[in-house]
Image 1 (cartoon, rainbow, N blue to C red):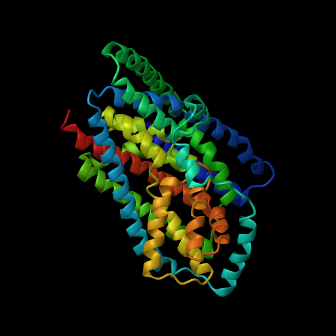
Image 2: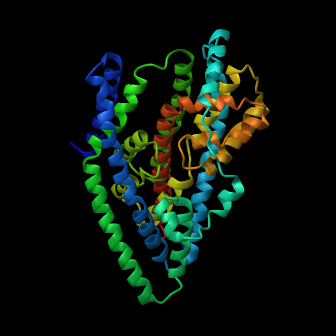
Image 3: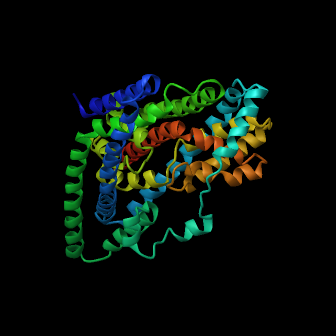
Length: 409
């Protein structure tokens, strides 16, 4: 059985086992999720420990190996341009699709009142979100080792990128020494990633079982309908990436699907694009992407590109508006979708960070902040689908840019 199939089997078995425990558990079974949960955490930690050395070595090799810095700058510009174009497309898609679907949800007055009462409890926790000014200043780290230890990927990428560009300005012999050093680190990290992915089915099973046991087969009525709409729209957008990668990236659809499946399974179970990064590099090797492209594009995409976030967050915003009886017209629809698309690049790396950063949008349109609390309570499920779509988009971008860049050799 292939690694892809093994990981997907672990995912399905975890879901089925968790739902079974939720429906029929008692006594001995009730304690099982708590027993296996640390195993899933250990597996995620094992993946995360490879991210910093892997990203550092791949970025340095991708940039410093190029003799002309303009080539890297051109690739970076193409990457950002593709990010913006894809975010714009999903914002248009959700602005057109979400309002009519949300309007069909079964929200009678009693149900709406009951859900509104739950929001006060859901917003009881406070999360300190740094203002945009602080976020911008912190992009240039004062201590590169500290941000590496803390796993602050965006400042680390900025430092490593500048360091790699500096390497292109030193002597050939000195640059080759550094490249050989980080090349050896890259090779060792890929071996370590292979070991970690070999036990992937166990890790994914241990992650999903406790989640499924808590959720069960619940989520009925209005909440279930909202989740169906939000997750359905995200799934449609993710599936649209397949023909995009095939037609523009010049890969076979079966080859692309097989390469993406483990990445999606890890993203779905961990809810983390960064934790999925090692499997993205493995997918890039399977797709035979240019290392100079995947080494640069994938780390930047994992840290900044939230492809599906505007879909889930805009659908949630319309659900909150319907819940509180607030009518949003076409102009509000367009502005909200655009604002959420812009803020997706600023989403902090904390649970439900993409929701918390939407507070200014809610305040601008007179939407109740309490509604964000309800969305946070439901975000576990939505965020799984968002992350699976995000990592698929990351691989898609790398595939397309690798094809566009191949002509230069």
